[in-house]
Image (cartoon, rainbow, N blue to C red; front, side, top):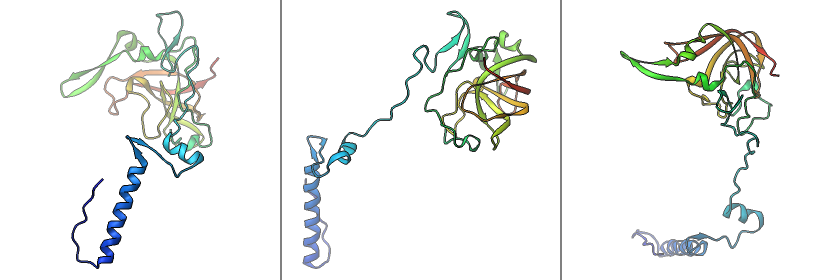
Length: 226
């Protein structure tokens, strides 16, 4: 390894020290890099091992019966629920999952894969959702949907939040697209949690919402998951 030292108007002793420093640095680089492999001869024990072979984070494996992105539901081929954060202040102190826990099967609940049957179409100067007939029929109907809470307020209990198909893994991100989100307002506040919850109420299918939402439940209520 060769490095040139630019000419400077300095005392010869200064030049000598600079050249010595460059030679020492070059020697160190040659000692550390052998055939493209980093070698740490002067570091010992756990420090050398951690620098040369950094540990990879170990994520919990998905449940054996079904993966985090698999569908749950009735018989094969039938629609089912899709399984699938610094934590918000309302969730402070709770153990935050590294991966989204699976959604449980809830008899009579509207599956997220049904709500996902929507495409975007251009109407004049707007891009609007076009819902499948089975989804459009749910408008103004009493429904139950299981999902995860994304708080929109501070506090241990929430009366206005998003119900999502997957749990929140980033405090700065929306965990799904509009087809995987329901805006919820409840009559009584619901305790903030990372666990799945079940919300019952009247579903609105939104065809031109100014916020870009597709679904909303007003006057909803949390029900136990059995």
